[in-house]
Image 1: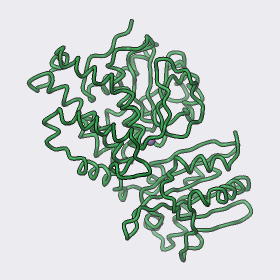
Image 2: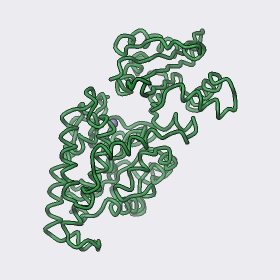
Image 3: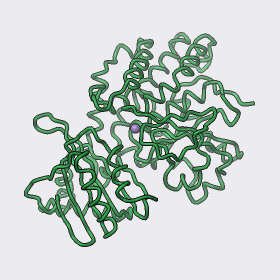
Length: 437
Ligand SMILES: [Mn+2]
């Protein structure tokens, strides 16, 4: 018989969760992981934490294990590349050291023996196919999914007591909230009435104040992702009913906590996290490219896509500065090539977002194919996608960046005028052109 964990703050929960990985290894205990996607953006971070936090303390729905461990799908070093994480953590009273990353799992070379697949279960959030080395070992142990990307049909439909939710929403965090809110409400009311919170020794005067503070801290974590993913609920293309309802729900949690509600306004909170996210000037170019990066194997080809919150011109300048060279183009192209080479990519794409001088949201798309087979895929993509993405040639004096076409090598840079399409749409289109597996 398994028991739910006692109600705890997020900080306390994460400390406990991290220690539980060790125990599961030492005592060969069962363990459940909630893991976000490999780009590890804010949405993936908060989805995994929210789901794990609520489900670990809610009454268990099965007897596998009561404890869900939220894993951020990057090495620990990647946290420093995400200034928006660092801006958000204090709002939830946590620090980088509390976040569980791939570095907290056993090394990939021994993970299978330390964490035997049959002792694990995996809930995927913000993606629906477990990728990379983890995918090779644990795909059969995926027990549930909540996601807002195109369904890759990798997770079995019958997930029993765990969710199987794949639908459109601005933020996957909104779908997680929808899924968890009944449990969350229940555990807040029962903690307030049972006095469980008081026993944790917080200095606040009464139990309900403690629980309200904990709830409000966790609520801000969720709000950050939803507001970032929907441009403060202002993006018509992205915002759905799920997002609007989740924001209402989370803000109501903040309102129950006088301490936090006195400081919170939606616009200021959004501005704070959003400007932190855009503040990447201090990062090295290679880090900017890996900060929000995803990779796929498609057919015999490997595809990588970096999303960047600054325009190509910013990246060129950065490359030039780092290379100490006047030729921004050369330095920039060399940097991209290096990034792709290290990762053995056949096709590499960079998607940028920025605001024009007239205040218009804009996107650029660069696609680079590095061999003959990759080139035919890229050319096919260019013609298939031209209309839907609104691809428009990028006219500039920098001809060598925006177009290059040789026998075994092809590159093109466009304005992507249909700005509603993010990587969520562009990646499947590129993969389709690359052929079936
Ligand atoms: Mn997402």
